[in-house]
Image (cartoon, rainbow, N blue to C red; front, top):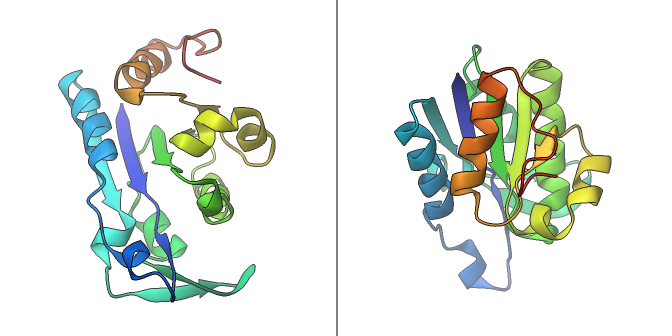
Length: 166
């Protein structure tokens, strides 16, 4: 199975310089390592880290600046043969942006499984699933949960009922 993990671009605050610091996606690296150790082919797209000097706005969020790869650039980097796309949403304030990214991924990769983790999904799994074309949400620490999920998908089994999955 081919898995692509995505760190979405981030909002930029013009008044809070701390919010503009690029942090490596360590949580995503942990997830990628666990998946790779279980024998899956993993690719990571680091939206903010791949284009730290690229700023753009989103039509639905007038006046809000975002830093990193654009949504279109991220979707273009997803391998054509992807089976599972995983992304994180650490803060509810980023949900509007992440939801738009999920929708664009679903448009291009209609048969791929789209999975989201992070604090937003853990806190609001029903909202996340109802307001986007996600297949499931990984809740809590995802390293072991996502490997169990991938094993189920690889074997053609349902992920319904797996602990830590909404």
